[in-house]
Image (cartoon, rainbow, N blue to C red):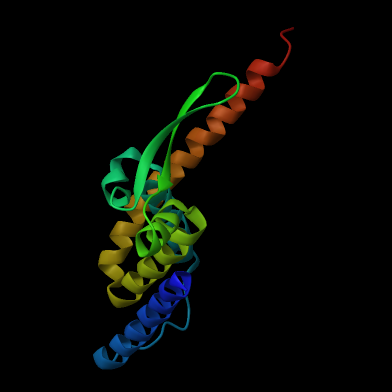
Amino acid sequence: MLYGFFFLGYVCLWVLFLLLLQVLGLGWPHRIEGMDMLLLSLATFRLTEVITEEKVARFIRAPFCEQVTTTKPDGTVVEEEVPIGKGFRRVAGELVLCPWCAGIWIATLLTFFWVLAPGMARMVLIVFGAAAGGLLFQIFVKLMDRKRKSLPED
């Protein structure tokens, strides 16, 4: 039932956005340039990671999640966040911890921002897109370094 509430909220967000476009006399974009699509994608990726995973955004997740420490069978101690409470609070916790779920909302809000204020939005998209690009390069370098270290020396 509560999942339906969040879905309904998402649909209402779209309806409000479309009404706002109508009231402002703005048209629906007929075309998205490749660079804007790339920036939207990268910014969505980075913002989703920040909100669902990073320590810096724990304050966003705190009302809906808690830190738990578990010990794995091999003795490794890991900290993870889990949803807390019941009802709305728990469902919100599941949403904010799920990169796939949160990513849809973030992509939607970034796209609305891009349609309503393209210049301002583009600056935000460039910042988070560059951060995503940097993160992807770091991952690539670490993977290459790991591969290089696993090769036998001549």
